[in-house]
Length: 233
Image (tube, rainbow, N blue to C red; front, top):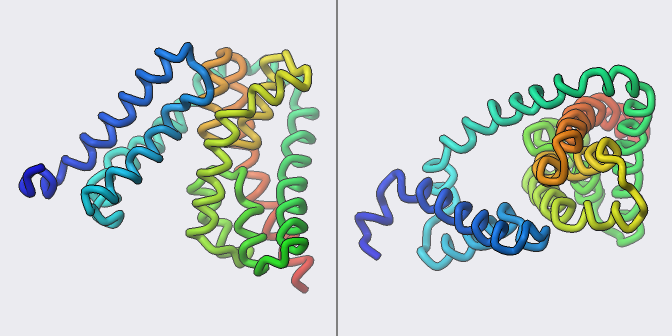
């Protein structure tokens, strides 16, 4: 491939869009099977292409800033389906709040305990504890609980992909049929990618997944630093 094309500022952006479009096509052709998750496909394919084309990540990140800028409006747009479900949300505010708090506490303590059992450095356990918090918020919390930002991002991305691939199947096998419960679980454990999968299942699931993602981010930013400070003192 021509060096001029490879060095062009829009090459990485166009490559990302093309790879995701291919992933979406495969996903649709598979009958929307979760194993053909377009985000997971795009991540793995882009990693292979960046290595093959010898494109450093720093350049890729700089050339795809437009996608990062659109992430904020896309997240805010989740408020639209949530507003349509406002009657359910107001009626179920107590069980939703308790479920989100339980999710954050279990995520934190299970990760820290797993790290201790496997004799991991404490920073690794703290990074793993943020696996179910959306990336921007998880990065902000990392410094406050002595986690490693780069590891935190890796754990968050892996969790999001894994949850979007197997989450709905696991919940179905457990007998979960209510779209509100399905969405709440996917959003609380797998953040944005879980919410995307929830929207594919049912509009109501997507609305509650968006709510769970937002509430988990808020709860984690308030609760996790307090717990860490308490156990560290």
